[in-house]
Amino acid sequence: MQTDRALEALAALAHAVRLAVFRLLVQAGPEGLAAGRIAELMEMPASSLSFHLKELHRAGLLASRQEGRSILYMARFETMNDLLGYLTENCCGGNPCSSVSACSVASASSKQ
Image (tube, rainbow, N blue to C red):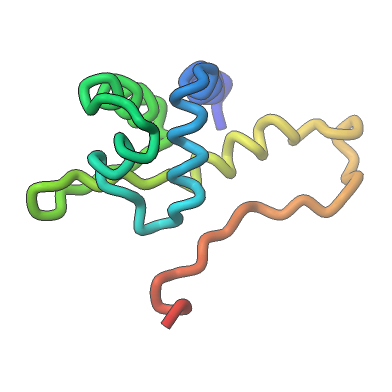
C-alpha cells in the first residue's frame, strides 16, 4: 500500500461515526448492509450517514452495489488488510516477531 492511500484510509477512519460504520460493516461480512439498515443501527438520519459512507467509499474502505431499490455497502477487506500490513510491515525492526495473518472472509459458498 502506498503512503498516500494509507493516509486517506486513516483519515477516513479518524472520525467516530465513520469508524463505527466501518466496524459495523466488518461485522456484517461480505454480504454487507443496506444503507437504510445502517442508518437504523447507527440511529442517525440517512442524509448524515450518506456523507460518512461517501468518505469511506472514497478512501477505498467500502464497496457498494445496487440491489433493487436499496444500495448495499460492504467493507473492502482487501483494503483493510493492506492497511494493517502497511502499519505493521516494519514491526520489530522488520524481523518477524509473531505470526500475524490477514483477515479472511469465508466465501458464501463455504457457508452452505
